Image: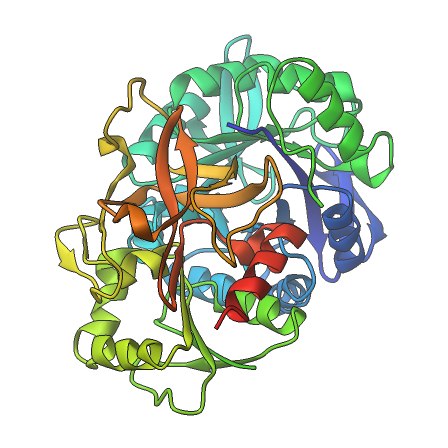
Length: 253
Length: 207
């Protein structure tokens, strides 16, 4: 298994934005420019999160994904606003390779099976936004970290695996955008709770943070703000992963 | 070159169209019932479920048509599920027949003979691919990594048709097939960066 480095692009309207703990959003730039840059820099996949996911904004998002897919020849995962099979179909038809389900799956867990049945389970990614509620438990949030769902993260992870999910993507809302380091307890617990491929992120600011997440046994690492602010490069993170005895895709040309 | 890309309702058509355009071809999205006469090559893309996708091909005498197309020496490329559909059958969501244009049967990865440890399925991400025989389209650089996203694989592919192999928990298995002008790839060249695009280019111009 080669650990994937996955730039995370939070999208609002036509822009890449970033908030602290998913709040207080700032505009960072054009999503297609970011995607191209990360493609050239050796990203293994690109993850788009539509943080508003309003009905109005969806056409913008899909148009944007279509544009990115013209020149970024990497797997694209698109999360946000997918409530039913038709939403998933439109997202896949716009160039997504995988759809990320959060609010849609929590409100209607059957959608996981429906998406897997048509697109294969490798296309059904469950995106979980977790807030810590005690030393060893986390609650899943919906609507980009804004709404509590009442679901325990570890229970939810086990449930979605049985419903046909193909991958879990977990972000610590507490850490997201803070650059204060990942919630390793959360990632470790989720890693133990599922045998599905797992990608994780939230709070990463430097290559040592990347390595600490790699050590939990995840398959992919989501990095947002730290890459957008050029605090380190994808190559630097991969070199450290490789030198530390883990595998990754170093030669990408 | 006019490249027909078959749309069967559940696939990443747009990415394949973008890749074909990028390497200088003219992609044309068609249905399995469409005429193939004016095309120079054909791609069956693949992101989806076999039992769902095979319905599209069940009543359109697609098999004879594609077979006839390939017998003129024109390239037919199946990607991921597209490769599996070109094969004999699959056990994904019940037993279903494929087009029977490539020899080999599709089975769940957990049944891969020799697999010792329980591995994570779907097998998702970048894996090393190596050439298993000399072929005009088969040269890949050392430690070439390509993108996979699959839970099923093709077994019982005749050795003479095997082109590429990869490993799942140290167990090698076939991930690339060529039988004359019909080619199948388990990985996604359209999603595998520059390396994938250059391989796609070689395959489409191999006949």
